[in-house]
Image 1 (cartoon, rainbow, N blue to C red):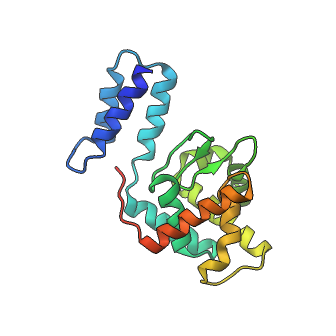
Image 2: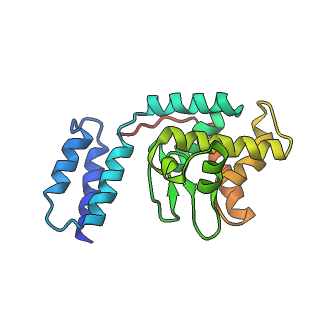
Length: 193
């Protein structure tokens, strides 16, 4: 537990734009912390690996996936912003992974479905932000095709977005889609490490 608190404090410090430590330097600091279990160190290594891509690189991946699967770029950007702040994460508390927070839990398997759609192993979507984003775009596209949605009218994409949320129940899905749409309306001005 002390290690988790230490990580939280370290992450808060790392979030400061003026801090100039690389992910590898922060990892060496964490490795010196004596209470770290092997599992904690593995989680930290996964965290650091997910931060090797900046927002610009993630944005390029999003644009590529949007073009490949004919989905609006802005929708993918909103999901990436809301779900992970453009960071390759995982696992979250509900077993969500990656920039797009694809889940594999007892009530939803967007991770497995996305991996199947793009012909990759689910682990690749956990580890690789490009694969994760492509998987989410493929899911969104498949759901849109199944419901006859196409074009740039974002309101038409609410149903496919609900399927992408990975949440159980229509009410929770609606709330999450509202959060995506609010991010679109308010604009996105964030950064990651």
